[in-house]
Image (cartoon, rainbow, N blue to C red; front, side, top):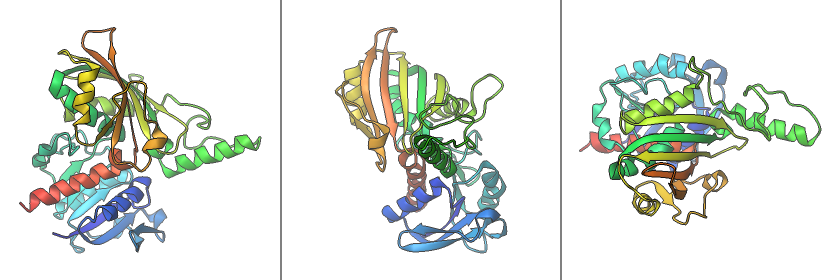
Length: 336
């Protein structure tokens, strides 16, 4: 059944990729409304061979326009203000922001990992996890089912596109300025991002961790198991697209690197390099729908330990593709 879609934050990186994926996958959309805040009115975005004019979300009536499906790709403030209105009008809302992820009545969904969670939707809102949580969940779930994950230590390497288009522009402008012996002051980041790494993704919290680090912990617990212990350090790196993570996992039960590689190689959404001397880089994942796992090896410092490298296109499977797959799951379930 064809859907009438509204996209909040339609000029964002997430929305740009989401519109491409909806078109690529021939999602049944009879009409798409591009919505954003007042400062983006007058701009346009592309959906396949169509050009969509961006409308003011504050003046948009979801009910009168018969909207059945909403994607929130913009700010937390936008999602908080308009998703409940859209949900109340009868639309199913898929939120790509952190706004409702910890709401017990809102399922946090990765379709390959916990598809049955869609039945827990009580507010017409479904959340898509943060990009790193999505990448990790795809890898951790099959390993958890095989040997029960006990504790995870993860260090992330996150590209500038995970923050915003302006952040990508800042990396480009700073890099160009340095080659020209000029100076480009940081605005989107607290310090220079070009030729640098910043051990801060999002705002710091009272315990010294960042919101992103807390979010990974809470989301993995909600998606996979509340018993999992997790420590995260999130780092912003000077790349445009692609998030990666160095992951160390301790299990309750015995599992070897060889066994883990075989399990992961048959798991949905993953590309696996079983040779521990081969690996995939963020640059190689740009435009790819799979999440890649490489450098899988035994950790001899603990009983039942593994280490591995995970990388994927943060704008595709880790974010926008996951949201589209949620929509596909909902459309399929709602018409059975």
